Image (cartoon, one colour):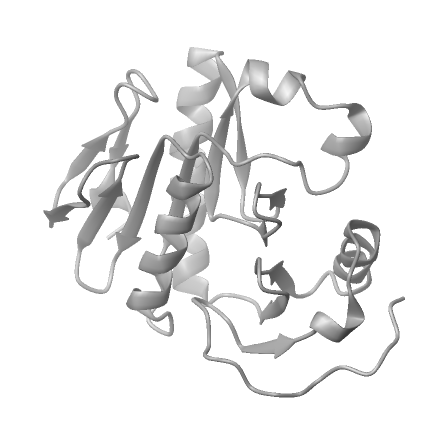
Length: 205
């Protein structure tokens, strides 16, 4: 268990966060952060590249239902496709800039995942997923979620979807391209990054 003096300065709340703490004084190593997550399994913890600890409690039942459907559809496609591995919101990744994140859904090409050692797979895998999805809940700040999506793309994601059931809008992120905004789409295709994957949004709205 990590023990030290923690600053209780309240930071601007990141997406989905109950609160955010400046823990730079703790100098959390990868091992300490991983243990902190194991000691607090009821919480979803992330660490920004600036050393801020993001603490998120359980989601609402409706958000959980949507996230379950999202991951089911992605997993169903990934098993048929066979070129990569998909992950739910309990999986953590360490981005190249040091941030430790847990997207609501993600997918990694098989060769990228198999290049990791077994030890790396058993902690917060040191890579950015090729595909990431964030699902907005009513309590989430859209602006902060959009900043998070930009970070994913800057750190190596080839495709990102920010799904906002509040306004029935999907924001599509790709490297070196303008963000595409889709209003009330019924489906969205993952080509060419996820060839043949089509997310049915009527089951998520």
